Image 1 (cartoon, one colour):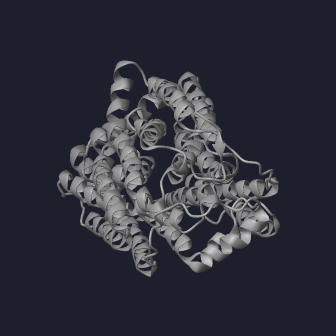
Image 2 (cartoon, helix red, strand yellow):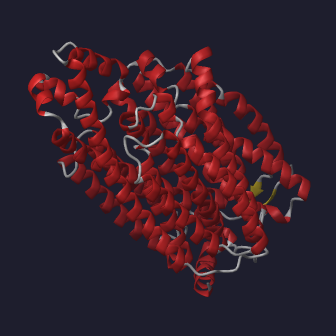
Image 3 (tube, one colour):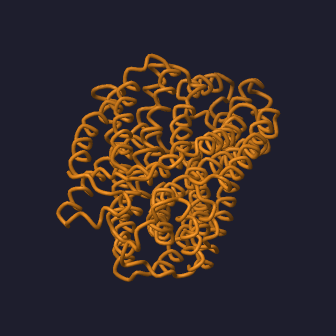
Length: 550
């Protein structure tokens, strides 16, 4: 397809047929990345059985999120300058190569490294896809397309566990990674043919120092949270050092951005009330909801006696709800041009879903979890695609990539912080609650080393270790009764911890709910607006003026 100027939006060049071909290409690219994030759930036990390294399990997921989070704001800025095509294609190629390498990994260390490379590709793809939607359609039309792409992600979440289980059981876990290669081979030529290459006469000075400062700050902060949760503990020397480094480099980044003519993230964006509020809503709802439900499988399997498969599939109902409202909400947004009411309703539904989860206990029927997760998904589907449109609507097209990547960046930061903080709640409250509920007979009869194993809430997730503990207790006189009493104490302990986590989640999402009422109803633009100024020096005042006008 012909080369076009990057100073004008793609939507001004493409006809309706070309737009739909491009949308299909982008959805294929996104499906590839989204499927990978959900397909691993059912394959994890087989991966551990083959590669070992149980202590490194969390890093199989952390390395991906860390790399993805760091790359997002950088790609957003650079793609605003140089166009999306080569970034999107480069992200797809990187993701495909990394997926193939993951499939050949011989130990957990190799898999973690290759997952990090996969995270770079995934971050580039997701950031570029959503920014490209902003290039194709004016704000008033974006809602229904954002809904379609969020629906694509939800569909991948629904299909992922099933596909992962089938591949793992019949051809081996390595094919959960290899499957990304043929999907990428479909997406790559489609993007090459349907996405025009945008060129600009601008020769901006890239803020390399700002990019490095932001990357180091982000990595330091995420490692501080991860290591505090998994290894060193909160307020350890390692945690304090990394957190201090995070804030120092963040302050240096802000100073660098204030003086550079081509900043990675223009600070003037943060004078925009709706831009700030929308990103805060995204961060709070993502952190409050995903941070809490990350520990729900442990609760369902331990307290509610669900199977590992059933506990791994509890997110499927949530994805179904999200799929429905992301599509319906997007259509409503495009037809009405108004977003505040559905954002209020969506955030309220999230609060309702979390509040209902607080009613769960050891005797609750498992289907209640599915119903409550559907409500959560319905609310989240109304909010998240809408916030993407709101954020893009209040900035000029020149900054569409930066604005879009900011939403993804803050969402991922919220998830990491939420998982870390609620993980600390689980770690600090479960063991005392278990010890308060365990019977005197169990304490007297069971070896202290064995009792200590029950102070790990994930004991039942390790089938081999749990079977050994059960066999040891059953061998005692009156062992069945003692085992039942001990398991009941474990259920009470995990229930207490999960309720505290959900109370924290409820508080966080409630703040997000309040912020949705503080947002103003800025009319969605029916056109792309005037072309961006040719130089950054001229564009900066234009941006500030546009922001103040809103």
